[in-house]
Image (cartoon, rainbow, N blue to C red; front, side, top):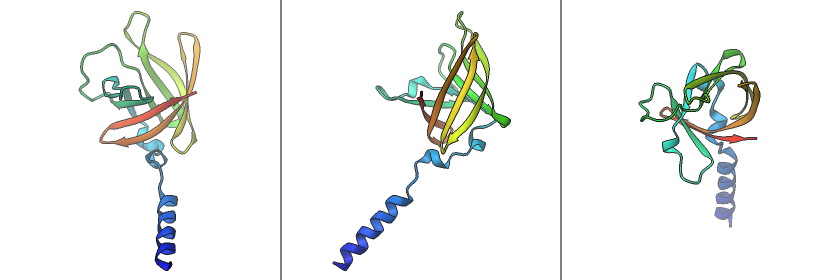
Length: 132
């Protein structure tokens, strides 16, 4: 009986100490780098988006969507223009919680705002989920 109680206490302690990788990401891990979506690596049927630094050797594709966080909450969003050329959009980012950021920018006169939930960052691969 003592062994069972000790085992359960250890199990509960281990579960309570677990944190998602996103909780460990600080803005410093993201700022000063341009992150572009690697849609080729997105798992089929998943809402998880995969991003890589703009220095990655991407295969040829249409302009990639992405973002850059800079100090002071400065955001640059990347996407395609109506003529399918790369385009940048100025905006702001702010941390809303552990691993969750609000991105707001203006794209061709329209305000775009959404939350980005960071899932993991390892070996220059950022995984995130876009939330309303």
